[in-house]
Image (tube, rainbow, N blue to C red; front, side):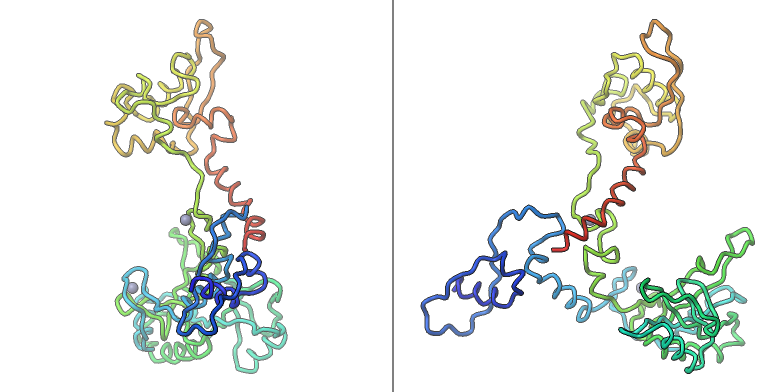
Length: 379
Ligand SMILES: [Zn+2]
Ligand SMILES: [Zn+2]
């Protein structure tokens, strides 16, 4: 049964996937009925990237993504209730809930169809009577050759109406909402002109945008959602991957426990594995300077420090510089040496010098190196 199940399963795969799954000879039966294909793959290391999983190798992952995106029931991430339809009236209520007098753009998201040229797309909009198009957050008049690039994937929205949020405008707003849902296949975006909090108007591209939906709206909080796409279920797409590990499933960082020598000791007694250790005057001076500058008590056992104090100790205080007093010649160390916090918490930081003192910089570096990994890792 196992052999026949696997044989049928392997038959359903593409030639590419088949090479990874061993061929099984046909069993010696004339006929086997009612047997569901079984998923059985040998466990072995193919020496590939963490982006390669049983799901990607067998290509089942592609089908699951489509299944989830097309047949899944969307829920509101804030209220955990299934999304449902929203009437135009409810949408208008939401629009009018912003401060009265706000200037709003009612937008219908659109896309170039496969094979459609920007010229024919714009001509189509013009023929339908639309005047303005928003491209990546900036509004252009359609008759003034807006910068549409077919190679770049622009975010395109038809400007259906420019309105002022006033109850007296209700019927006009309702008409425009209906038109926006019509043009946007059930999705409408509302961009609101705001200032930076000091009276300076923000650039249009920075205006907050609210999603409204005819069919995918939360019955509890009212917010709308765009239909999900398969790539939003992919850990190989920035749209779908976990933001903490970028879809790799693992993450490099510092394990706090590895830095602690004995949590029942205080910092001055040597609770942490420091390099060099506290018998070195410079190391001692840096720890003392850190305690003075941050208010960390150096004489309290490590396991009695508060959560906040532990955070300062292990995660640092950002970009703040902490001066370490000049050591005298008898201390056996050099001149004044500014150290970034927390010198105590990052042995590897000290070993590698300035580069490692910036955890953010490392994080960015890791990100920057990702794209190649994706490209090759998709299988
Ligand atoms: Zn909700
Ligand atoms: Zn993750």
